[in-house]
Length: 533
Image (cartoon, rainbow, N blue to C red):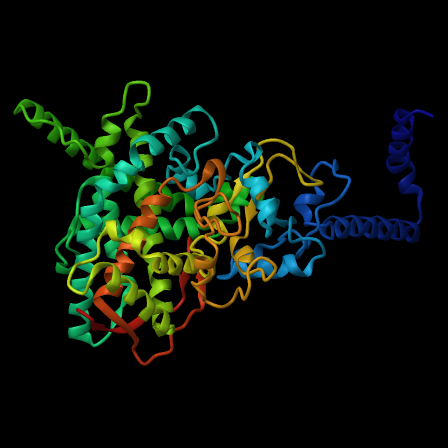
């Protein structure tokens, strides 16, 4: 008998014969149907990787190993914690064969995550994972029109070309040497003043405003004196960045559950994001117009354009085929400010905490600086090449405390693809747990020990070619500002260590992590400094 006849027979049974059953038979039938429903629901929820994977097309011969998590929620609890990188690393070790690739769900979103350098490199260097998943907050904050989140295509390729050729070229990075040097010197002075007035220094605040000034100088050609309390424009910008960090770091239920939750905007993410973007458009738009006015005035007075301007000047000077609209310029510049402000500050705070905890390492770095530069000459960019141990300290800090252990790594499968033997359907979010890789005892000897010497014995590249340590990412979506960020960290660390001996303040240095947008110190570092020069 055909399937059509079977369906008709079934319908006839339910609609015409069911009423003739006795009440006890109906109860038995209801119990049977309810049991079947519960069994089906349990099967969905217990599927490897959780409900989002159970609902995917069944095309894989071998299921990707992974935890199912609580019904419907999946591993939501992991991403609402402050140590998601550690929780996911622990899960990948507890599930058989899950280190290379593990599947899991967060609501109805499919994820895969790798804690192995070979599989990580396969994903990050593949054109099949060339897109990034764009959360509602990232979209509303304009990042879908900037380098980090723009969809893979001609527009994104143009942005990458602009970044490599103009914004972050070696020549451009070198042109900001005086800016970096000046801000580093200002931080040295501010730390000394704070120590004299308070007897201790909260490092994070000094580094945060120094980083903000550095980004403002390179992007907008502006600097602020935050110590006076009179820099209204600077504090407005700091407030915009802080609000953006809160929105992007917030777990938004609407990103992972049915669309009506996003429409309801229960957490106010859309409302807050749109209010913030309105302010960003005015703030950045005014600075772009200010640059245009200065350029018109300069031409009217017969002046010549500066050979090396800031990033706004670079974008205004683009050729016709590369030129961006004003709205896209705002998105690109806003992302640079946002992404460049705290990464350097957070990494330097971790390094200085390690210097306080490991005085023997601190002394060794300071001796290297003294031998290379001398006791009275201030360290500069050109001296960094003569400081291999200082560079090893930075690498070790990036290994032990990677600023972006998870969140900055997310990619999106734009096609159905195989990773190793496993099938990954299009639309799956792919992540790399760099923290798990850098703490794997099969990859690193004594991974939980802070030992910069390991990088003197083996020169491990950190720019993305070796996935044992790739703090800036790898492949097409590697961080475009990695070289500039690293140059800033090297110089400022050298300046701070040349000037001061860093000592505990009496409180124990707490290395507890807190994963927000970046992996920060949960308890800000408070210490004492003693002048060396």
